[in-house]
Image (spheres, rainbow, N blue to C red):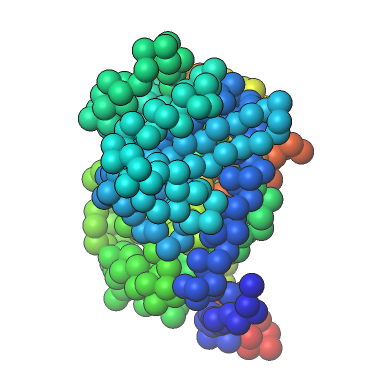
Length: 449
């Protein structure tokens, strides 16, 4: 891979954040395809063996792609072409895996075209020939009641597949949901190296947004900061997978501020000294996604630090994180993790709410769901309740704790979210977590830095 990089230095009045290295489009394509090579040739055989499937058929049409297929296309394929059919056949005894495309073209370097339309004009007939030649024990298709990302096979293609499938194979067709979810949720070693950079970039953009470079108290609005973040991401050549939010909580002496649901937060409020400012922000880069919530305090003219009650509030939020991550143990379901974490946090005198979700190929990805903001008693089966925690997976550690601030005569929420990795050795944050409030403006040291 070429060493040429675009180096971006984010400076905040002499305050230099980490230099970021963002690849150009050609370099990104090379990295994406190298990661796909590793995933197809090393990860996929393991996942097929674990799921008990020796054949996996993924079918999509152009502009209506299965969510799984979108993660399998090479960097130069922005969409499927016509009807694209991928067939993966695993021969565990021979330790081989075939990666075939029933399509007019090779799908990148890994998936080789196995259809000559001049010899066999009917695409479905050719697919059935390939299946019959391999005589699989089980044929996995992407349909699922319980996981939306594993339910990408549309009704028309399912009916076409089944009507063309020889009758002796009908009983071998099964849902590939376990394989599809494992494919989406599992991260490779190289992906985790890259993930660290993604979260670092995310943290740096938030730090710059929550600074005097962007925010002038009494003038700047929450909407101004949101659009600054969107523009910053665009200027860096990156993408966001959701529209960011910025909101404030403050003393009732400034303005009455009640709890808001995720759907009805005020869109635009002027940011004032004494405000606790909160963001929800994530980026997409190299086919991975981040999701981060952090907090900043707007200093009053006479202040050089945040009030103790907010400093201690953040510590309470960190305690809830600790209860949650300590309960992330292989094989536990999301509801088990949720119940244990909430119980322990409440016994410690906290008022927690946990709504952690899988993160990776998608922002709200497939895998173990640990609560929802409106389902603190646990989620139903079709939201992934029964799905166990697996290693080599990433989660948005998303939660809040309610604290009472007598100085403000009200309750507020300490809302936090950080990317965390669960591996064979347990849990770790991908690129650290917030343990200190960001300050607006930055406090300079005695040397004026």
